[in-house]
Length: 233
Image 1 (cartoon, rainbow, N blue to C red):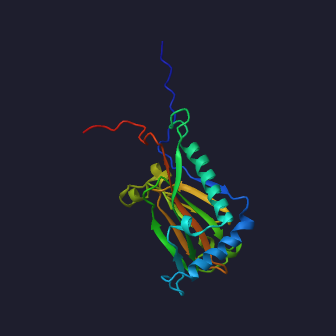
Image 2: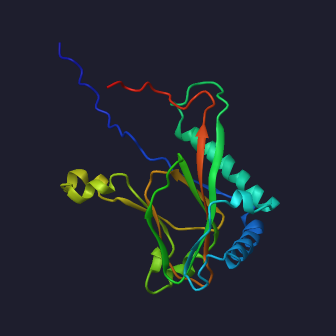
Image 3: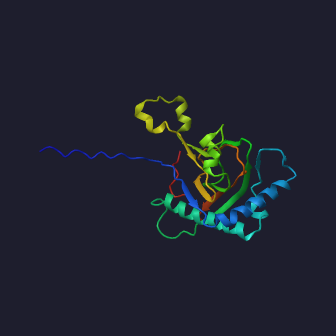
């Protein structure tokens, strides 16, 4: 009797979780936040008034005391909770663990005049986020002759990107050769991503400044964060 053939199933390990959430009150709150951030920039003694790029300190939790900003932060926390639960489904132990979510840095950035923020990652956190407060509509951005549809997009780089420099490329590993993901910003959209993921704010030129809020977050367990035993050496 011949044996039945073993079923072959493709497996994909170590995917990168990302999430997009839309802030329901963006139309009412974003214009106020844009004015507040522009005022903070204008009163910053360290700022260069003529610079095309500005990044605030990451202490907005202590400096901005507005109910609208508090509402935005609550939206961040709720989105993070949902996304972290989905990303860790089947990994977190069953039951309630009293996990503590903390935003450990919140800041804003303003860019225009072809300014960009080069490739970087975020440290000392598990999740990071970018929220789009203000930017020209996609159709208007695409009319910019130099940058076109890439005007002001957020570009993410695959963790495999560093391997491509010395990799042998053929049709067999075509799946890893498309190593960037361009997200077209939309006002009121929040992007959540693992803090280790390299990303870049592409050059932007528009009628209105590109204004974002960024943050880092930790999700801690009071009983300890290690779920798996460490291997001894």
